[in-house]
Structures are given as structure tokens and as C-alpha cells.
Image (cartoon, rainbow, N blue to C red; front, side):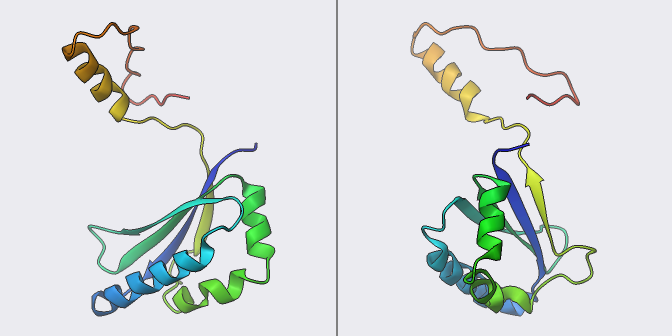
Length: 134
């Protein structure tokens, strides 16, 4: 299977070091600008688990990520965050294949266009509860 992937890396960061962690994330992101295949990176903080932080990056393909991971720049670039790796997890990172994407803004835009009196094609039916859209 080819296509976009997301890579999630789990960290444990004490609350008193979070600002420094975020600054380091921004510094690393600046260094990663222009890396072939890297589309975006987001830093996420758990709302229920204090200290749990996840770095989520999106790549054009697993091959693009593998090329980056094998490059000489990979290890030194990510080194400043390694001390925060969540070693309690069985894996510190995981690759996820994007199977489907759905954007919530499509229906809102269609509703506002209808309100403006524009003619639109009918919207597809909503998926049933528990079903995902491919």
C-alpha cells in the first residue's frame, strides 16, 4: 500500500519543561523545512494524561519517511528530544497509513452556499454510525 502516512512519536515531558520542549520542537521544525516528503508536523498534548506529548508528522509516503530516517541528518536533528522519549510504551513511535480522510468544513460551506441561494449538487448521505468513509 502506498500513499500518505502519519508518524506518531510519544514523549513524556514534565509540565515545568513544556515551554522548552515546544521551543525545541520549533527549532527542529525549522531545520526540517524542505525535507523531501515531509508535509507537516504537529505537537500534541494529552488532555487527560499529564506529561504525555505526541509529535505527529505527515509524510507523502512510507518510502519518503524511510529515506529521511536512513539519512545522516535524522539522528542529530531529533537528538534534543530523545531524552523525553516515552520508554514506558512498547514502541516509542509508530507509522500509520492514512486510509481515509474526511473534512468537516465541506458541509458547512455547502450550507452557507445554500443560504446565499447558490445551486449545489446534492450532498452524499452521511455514513451510518460506526462506519467510516473510504
